[in-house]
Amino acid sequence: MERFIKNTFVFTLIGLLVFPSFFYLKYHVNDIKNLIGYDVYHSIFKSQSKKKGVNTLLLGDSVGKQAYDNRSYNDSIYSLACNQAISLIGQYILLENFLETFESPENLEVILIYRPSSFNNDLDQPYTFNYFLKPFYDDKISKILTSHAENKIKKIPYYYLAKYKPIKKSNWSPSYMISNNYTNNFKISKTSSEYLNKINNLCISKKVKSFKIICPFMSNQFSFKDFSIFKKNIEDYNLTQVFDGYFNKIIFLDKSLFMDGVHLKDKSTLPNNYLDI
View 1 (spheres, rainbow, N blue to C red):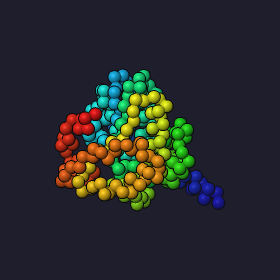
View 2: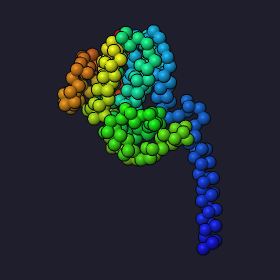
View 3: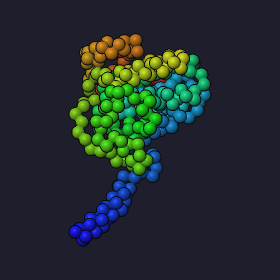
View 4: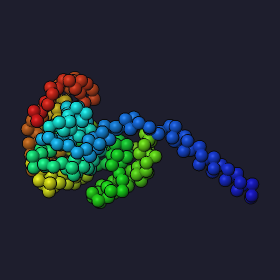
């Protein structure tokens, strides 16, 4: 028995020494630029930086980023567009960060550039751990989480580990099966509906000049008939006013220009400031 206890102690000690070393060597990232989803961290940094002279703040998904890159638009048009995987909770936090230090919101136009499929995000994607939990999940987030969002987060394996620095500074994430077809599934999730209202209400409470949502360019493999469920969701969630004008200026481009039906092969296909913001 004594020998068994000693062996158990030795193997446990070896495990405690070897596993952290293995984890560090395989997953640890020294430079934040090498983290999966670095563009999200870049947008967080920009959102927390004090700035003046901004007339238009852009939030958005990766399609919005292709058109208005968050590394290029840093002046009167100020882009925080990064990725739909941060969900509209992440977009809300970016907006909240920005408005905390912005001195003249009454002159600010806030625009969310979001593809219809991006509203499908219900914290149920394989990207959620790296793109949303690691950058945004901390002890302060509880004050803005709805009960639905909190319940969705708790369904993600090992979600609680995302609060810890060794995990945040690594490219590790749990493996879990997800069947959500986010690319071509045009609908609005409950999470998106809740945080669209929060974004809109935040703009109102901060006396922001205006808030609107714009649909970016889309492949002509899609058409307006694909939006039937999406439009019904808008009515069901009482979001008609928030989506006012969303379908008016959709630019459909030839499908041959797209690498995956979503993103352009060459973003120079679009003129600078193609939405004439």
